[in-house]
Length: 156
Image (cartoon, rainbow, N blue to C red; front, side, top):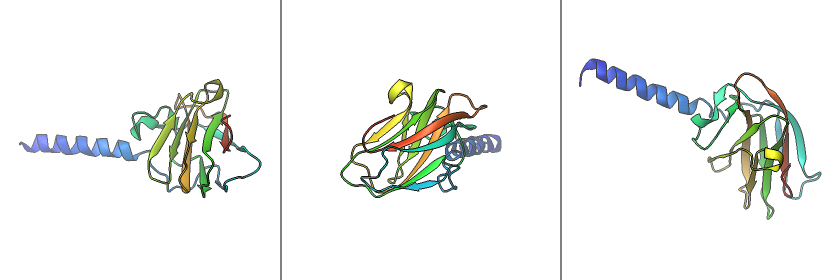
């Protein structure tokens, strides 16, 4: 293999791995803070105001993810699970998406799974631990007002 081909292959591998790691900054401090909730928390739902969106294409995490998200998580949930489901959803007038990195290290994504075409993720048997949450939009230029809802009872 020629030097030119080896350099081209190395550059392509570097570009592919850099893109995949670009949005995976779940160790950064969340933009809108951390919330610690225990099973049976009140009031239910817990509600937080956020700005959705960012410059990172969520597909770099997983092809099933959509929208544009920020580098750092929008919010972080510390959750010691019990017997109830955990529902993370978004309410917004904008077309938002939802990306969650769960305690198991897996990525969970949704678009339009909740009420009024808003995203929602339901963990029927949630794991205890840290949930990093990103709320995306379908455009990488404008941030949109959104409401993050965390519930054990209902999607918003």
